Image 1 (cartoon, rainbow, N blue to C red):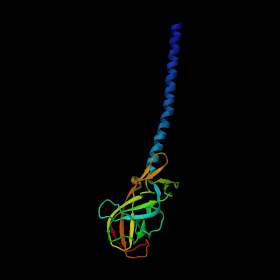
Image 2: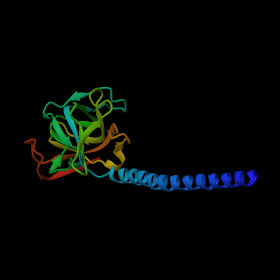
Image 3: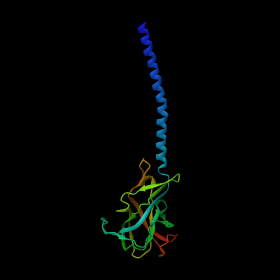
Image 4: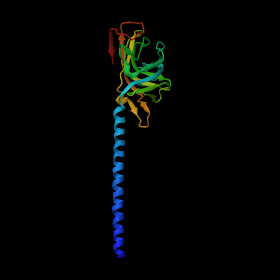
Length: 202
């Protein structure tokens, strides 16, 4: 009799434990699925940005004959300010214009940045943008284009935010430190960025 009661008790306990385990799985599965879906949404929306804005304090150019880019000259005719890199790839809206290049080859341009670097997400929320070495060695723009001295040029930068903006997963965002740039010789010398006849070089 005691053996029968003991077996019945063990069987009841086993059924109860199994039921509890199944219930926990039922609760955990939707939670895990929701977390995975949230992560997927975050990843998918990471490339949807309204603006990638950098706070340019100073612009320098390297026209070294070799690839060492040891000598940098400040372009004094470019005003500091915040520029949207997503809106800097056309003559109507270049990153900047300058007549400060010397005759030769522009190897690189570097953007020395301030602290007001931000990214505007697809929902309109503005968050800080991490720019490694942006305030010291600058954000590099590779150009490698032949230019004439004393002529007016527009410098254009087009970025792929899905590749160059890094969503770090903790709510912060970073920008890769090297960009690709182009120069376009404009037909005017007034420093504007309007629609002008131009020759684009890479």
